[in-house]
Image 1: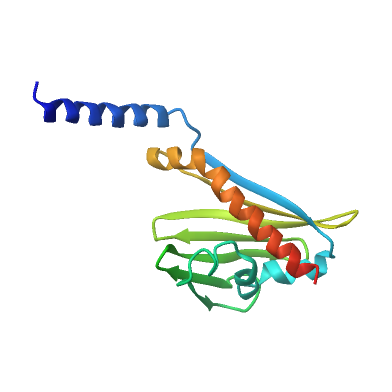
Image 2: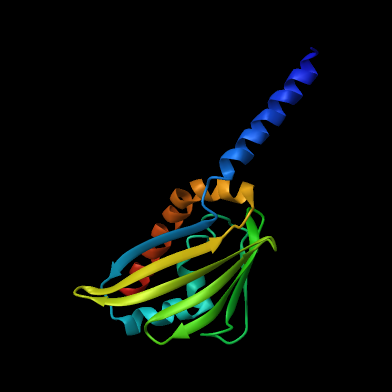
Amino acid sequence: MPLIKKLLIAILGTMALFMFVSLFLESQWEIKREIVVEASKEKVFPLINSPRNHAKWTPWDRNSDITIVYSFEGPETGKNSAVIWNGANTKPGKRVITKSVLNEKVEYMIYLDNKFSARGELVLETVEKGTRVTWRDYGDLGWNLMGRLIASSANEQIGYAFDKGLMKLKVLAEK
């Protein structure tokens, strides 16, 4: 058997194996992190309800891509306000606030590279030492088998970014 034929069979076999394994992975995914901020919900809420403020504490900033550029559309805060980003090392995206409940939570949609979308929320809860901020993104990949493989390993990487962003939010809110 020529080498090329063996190589082709190995590649196709590996692809078939990954597709088979993907069938057994969950189509639903969720990434969730939280932090306690020593500030009131009233002080934290404006930081999560404004795309302009979100750009100040997002983990995906000029430290991760010096070419990233932000633009904004819609109202300055609340429902239908949006941040749009693009950079040489960052996929273009848009985050639109879909629901805003004063001093309680902000829900949003994220659109990445015109290929992927996800839902998310930032929830505020009063606790003994201030405000618990919970950041959660979630979605359903349906029959996107490659997406299922990627999502199964994304929790750690994106979760790390969420932790970094929440720490930046904490510093801002506690000033």
